[in-house]
Image (cartoon, rainbow, N blue to C red):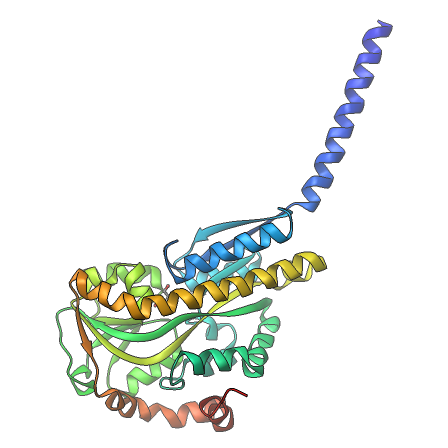
Length: 328
Ligand code: EAX
């Protein structure tokens, strides 16, 4: 009896010990779920993987990063805002619905090339825009990239913007893109990326516009016949997180997230470059007709009817500052 009692007490003591170890381990162990809106083998997939590697390594596994696919970018932002997921990687497409100031980056023909866009995003202009996220319960951790966007169509062919009058083109849920297409006489049809493949398959839209990386990794060429290299607008990407989650991290955790985000941006930009060079040939080889667009200025002109509106909305000064930005 005496012996039994002692055994029970010992067992109870070790149970208590196990429970307290369990509690402290749980407190130190954080799971960070990050969604991204393209396959693992894509410009966003490689960003998520680089982010995970750095965050887990720097925190010695105290933060475990779980990567999930989430093709509805607006829902991913909402879910991050609510704290149902910690972070999200995607295009900046629907972001203006949460942080209106970001829309300035969506103006067509704003950036001349990748160096220009990256230079602006990495400058104080990009930092000023990232600082706007906090008011929406979000943390803009780093600018990524979705790439310059091009037009694709199904059966209809286009020799210039005049042919596009009355055409239904899927756009992101992005007010600026919609206004620009409307100015060109096109009927923009906004929808989440998750709805795009079925819309193209069913022919509810005549075409869509996207970056080479997105077209390639999501096999959109299988649902479209023509790819017009319009490069008409730059599409930023973003790695954002829930603000309370970031504020709740200790210094080491915060640094790991920042370093992970920088690694994500490096991997993401490298993949965009690779896709924009080799990817076009891959797409041609897979059968889509690739058309160089000699008259890009005609698209610029066709969309120019929206410029006064953009000047009023964002301020002509800010637009000029972005257009005229030069590396120091
Ligand atoms: O992953 O919705 C879109 O067209 C975006 O380019 C999205 O980032 C695709």
